[in-house]
Image 1 (cartoon, one colour):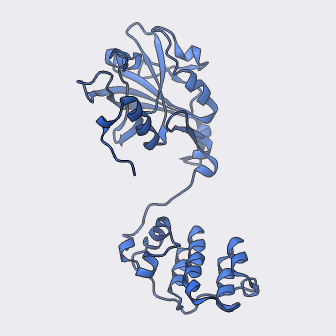
Image 2 (tube, rainbow, N blue to C red):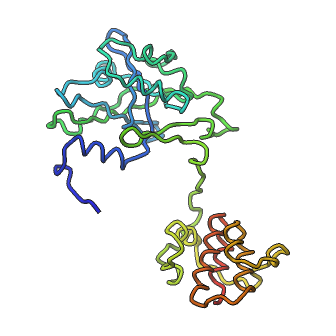
Image 3 (cartoon, rainbow, N blue to C red):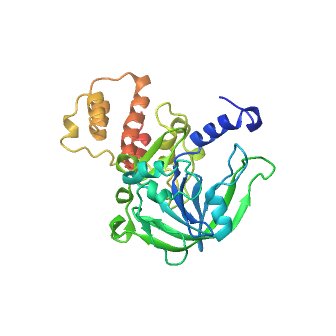
Amino acid sequence: MKTFQPQDISPRELHKILLSGVAPRPIALVGTTDRDGKANLSPFSFFNAFASNPPVVAIGPGHRATDGTSKDTYSNLMATGECTISVVTYGMVEQANLSSCVYPPGVDEFVKAGFTKRKSLDVKPPSVNESPFSMECKLVQMIHLAPEVQGSGNMALCRVVRFHLSNSIFDGENIDPQRMDLVGRMGLSWYTRASGDAVFELAQPKVVGLGIDSLPEHIRKSPILTGNDLAKLASLEQVPKRDRSFPAYDNHAQQAEDFSLELNSGNPLGALYALLHGAQQRPEKLQERMHKVAQLLLSKNRVEEAWQVLLLPL
């Protein structure tokens, strides 16, 4: 494992490493205006939400590392105290990328990137009409993170005073991530798309789990079960008691003959039947294969059945 302190490497290399490891990051298209009302648009991946009551988000408008001068977003925020933030979807990511070009002061990136301005109601800067989720914001505080370092970063804490949400992103009362189709920033030139198979649900614990440290040793030290597998098992309040009616095989499972074929086809009870009722297995491999059956059940979120497999006598 590589271990080093920030001062051991160049700022450029440090920037690359930090952004590759702290990822994916949401992208904010930040709209501002200068004192004369001229619009500016710039993408930021140093962006996130930090409170909901009241709603507060933060972006990282910096200074130029070359000469320490202020970038337009920072200057405009300090001058007016207002901005808009529009999220970036897959359908607009190329335009958002184009808006990152270093255009001369006074050039309207909305126009250059082909975005339509949405008129704001509570602040002066417009938001991006093509974005399905936009926020009107007022600056709460600009935090200078390292004022002694040229080109260092800042954190702009902004209070959201109005939301603009497209009806099309809702599935009933909730926002559907598949409909949003957001993109996130990775390191270097890499992005990620938050839709399709990349999006999954994981419910928060409803009880105080027993914890991985409380699992029986043969489970906790299994060469088969992963950390995710163990966490699912440890999410129950206590180790279950063995159910002597388990397993209840259906007709299909009772016809199983080959453990590997049943396991690879996603049939855990068939694999279990073949393991326990088929040809004689090598005793030293029995526990390992039982753990593979439990792992398959866990992948299907059948946690109670996985436990019952692990509680079977060998």
